[in-house]
Image 1 (cartoon, rainbow, N blue to C red):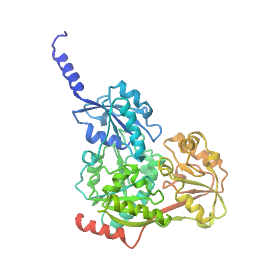
Image 2: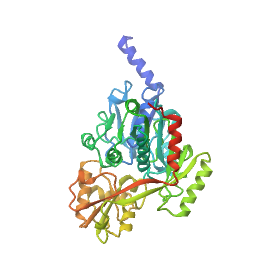
Image 3: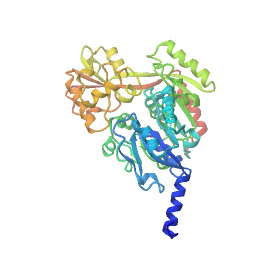
Image 4: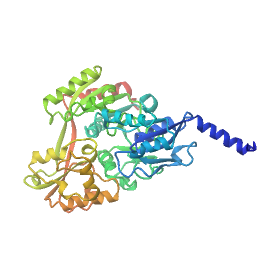
Length: 460
């Protein structure tokens, strides 16, 4: 027996307190995982989060979720490990529950991960809207998708422009992509292109923030979405949640819009959590109808009627254009597409390839010129064919992407990533930017936004 001093008593109480908690690991990808921790686990006396695991995005593991964000119950922060270590971690930390907290994986893969967790002795769970959605005092529109690369950002810009024409200020809050110093990235506000430099944004972050900034919108992102929404509310008439991947919103929406991709028919009911978005939506937008097969559009429509009969369904186009069309025809071109759309999004092509075919470019096989980690991307995502995904999660990988482009011997670079690579790379060939904008059909979205405005937006 040790003497019953105040210090020892406090130690005993602390140990008993921890013994009563349920040990948890959160499986994530530097986004939903941190949000779920912040709003559900951080001050929850029933749980002890012992670790995060990381997947999908390189160079996230090996860090810590910092103590400044973890709260008083986690004075040392929380370690982040590679997801490959999950079986060992379950045993080492005596884990009783593993929570999956990232997006854009097939329903089959979700259950495979669940089977692995259960086989190693822990329970497997998912957190839903009731436990993770925050409420705003301002009206919220959420734009989500069934898969990454469905056209969320183009639709979001369309919505921003609608309200701007009505003299209302929309603040965009973007799904998190905190790949740097998490403590410094708790709340990020982007108003100018220079803000991207100030926050040392990766290519993926630039792909999502830059088009909104160029369009004149203020963008918030970061790690602590409670603090983010309270700051954004001070300058917004309407909050627009621009979702990442196919995740569901962090905020309770007053209008829930889900965009489906007829280039990947059937994915709206076979990917997590995009299927949930499909079923929760007030409005289902079937986009890209100008480039999709009629039978694929009809399949998505049939699924909308079957899985969410109460939703309004509207069609939209994705209008693809090039800034210098005469310079494209007959030229040997390397085509660069939005990174996540091609990698874990599973697309074989994007707007860049459509533009190359439309305007008569000769597309170079970028795989032959890949260096370093870019070569590894092609090895991991075997479906990729000729096209170069704009991956760049740090200075080293961005340099390898630049070297891949410059080694190709192309005549022109068809850049269909939303980020302007010419601002951050030294590319030795002319760059032709490919842009894409949402186009509504028969005023469907305008009517829906008008109804939302009359019901939810207070005029000053």
